[in-house]
Length: 101
Image 1 (cartoon, rainbow, N blue to C red):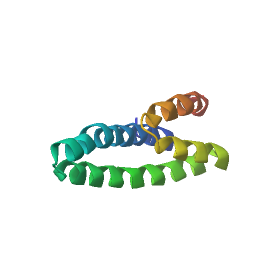
Image 2: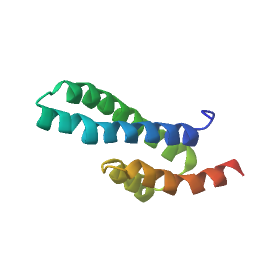
Image 3: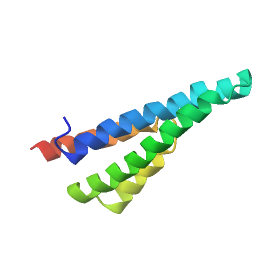
Image 4: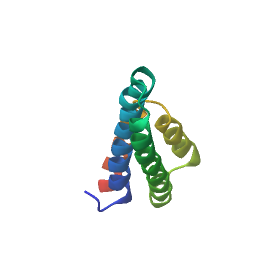
């Protein structure tokens, strides 16, 4: 599964997207409704590290698969919105079939 840059990117994208959802929908409400900022510190740091890994993987995958800059920018923008990782998966999965052929 980790043999190609595209496979690694898909996995990292999913993990980063889940970390974003945990941060926004679990840690943030606990911080503001429960007056406990601890979880935002933990999930925020984890998400930040995962986002950096996501960006490195995005550039690597762009380079190895000759993606154009517009497609790469679309994926970047999608990574900034909640549930964007699922849209990224839908956009990237058809390219997986092209790479495997």
